Length: 315
Image (cartoon, rainbow, N blue to C red; front, side, top):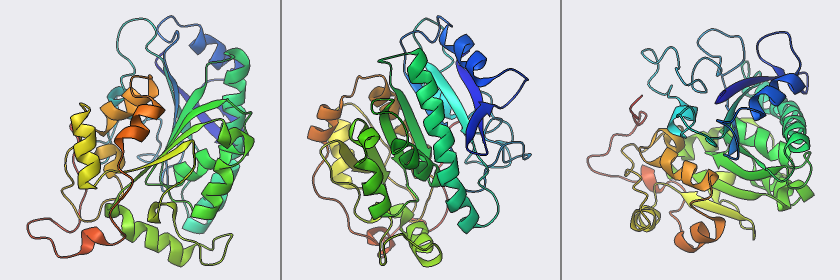
């Protein structure tokens, strides 16, 4: 049982399919020898996805080992398969597809992400009760990163191991507050940013009201905390440092792309190395340069670089 599907329903986690309860689903999954001591990773989607919506349900698209509708959308790739789940053998770990209602207006989705965060916190606490000392990692893209950050502040300290925030659609002050909660301080946090995402950050700042007036998106400057790292994946020095450590992330091919943190070739193998412990927090901190490219750097005139589009990762 390398992948299980959980849906947030009114702030509570529930099995996406079948009539049994969440506890029964978790007990069966965690007893599988193929899961064993491997990493447990919850995958959280962003805007425009929702459970039970044809072509927009993450359980049957990006969070499936055999995603549907790939021919219609090149951004649909199998997260669990590229993270190494579903391979034969023991101790391969468990991937959890976590779906929440993120359709409708951006204002509604932003608000509902906090409700989904409550459900995610309950899910990881349920797993922690069954597997003490085996932290659950959470990986969220876009508004899914807001869900993960919200869960940090509501889950028991130590329940979440790595919180991986891919192109996070969250304001910096709100993110810093989550990182500074007991659950947040006990976690290791990686914000994966890119200047390719600057347009999307600006749109959020224009249309969503932050808790703190004048606040910017987290991608503007990233996180600065003893247990948090920011990795800018279109920064030349960062790519060179990762390459020297054996992780070859492809160079960016677009000026604007919201999906490059998971579509960029080489990204998923790096994430897998982080999640299974081969790339430690200390080593990653030592590798990453202190500086980064400023906002709008990718929109400066660049010859031979397409302005719009998305990267392509083999399915």
